[in-house]
Image 1: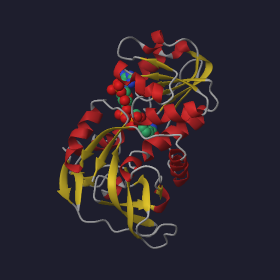
Image 2 (image 1 turned 90 degrees about the horizontal axis):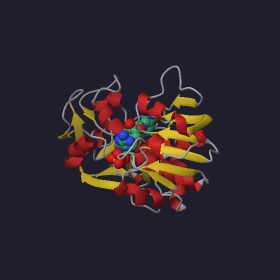
Image 3 (image 1 turned 180 degrees about the vertical axis):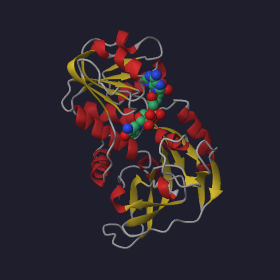
Image 4 (image 1 turned 135 degrees about the vertical axis):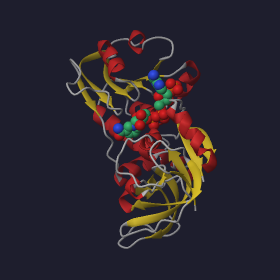
Length: 302
Ligand SMILES: NC(=O)c1ccc[n+]([C@@H]2O[C@H](COP(=O)([O-])OP(=O)(O)OC[C@H]3O[C@@H](n4cnc5c(N)ncnc54)[C@H](OP(=O)(O)O)[C@@H]3O)[C@@H](O)[C@H]2O)c1
């Protein structure tokens, strides 16, 4: 089968021929319609995790139809449309491939109202967004830094649907998109420091891009005791003064995938696809993501 692989850390991704993986007990083999690109995909190539088997098939997210199930799997059968996470880097397995194996608890029935190519864009960013908004609780006003990307477009919609006032960062050409997704205020991070453009005070900040110093620069606009969440691990060990700041690691589950599918089918969340590429264009798409440019999600149609 065709797959996008790397032969070692830092290697250039290329389309190669790999054997079809065999689903073991508790696993499901899926014929993928599309894979979803996440920044974590190139971070793995760059050495973010140590336990990697090479050649490594890149990618975590995907959607497609069940080909066959391994022993002890109930609830899925051949032909079922599913979406979820397919990465097992230790075994060199990933989702940028014609077929991929997932643990049965890492996938769920795909949303019925969108194409599988759109569903492929949802798992990691959507689950992270749901978990982040759950952590923020009933914040009145939420600042999202890096709002225009995969996680941010989901956070914006989920938070605003819960009645939270969303302040989103976006350059001018993406401002209308963010307002359409539910942002009440949009600040352009490319023209001036964010803290200079946001009226104090926000109750919470979800910052998807900043390093520690820019995170500190936001403190004047956050109310005392407000929440700061950093999925990019920019909160220093000693925390940040006057606020409840924490680094954030996503915990995935089939339950979260089902909640997301429900919200998509109910029309509460839409999948913002910024770019659709083929398997052979995936290496350039990874390079664009590494350069920090995204508008919603990139999907790789297989
Ligand atoms: N810890 C976890 O469990 C976890 C889970 C999921 C994701 N993450 C991490 O969270 C980050 C975001 O993920 P993602 O999928 O949303 O990435 P993404 O789709 O690449 O989006 C990043 C967004 O940030 C914007 N941006 C870049 N530089 C910026 C800046 N200086 N100020 C404000 N915005 C800026 C970009 O828009 P512009 O081009 O318009 O600037 C882009 O839309 C990644 O580093 C990812 O690895 C962590």
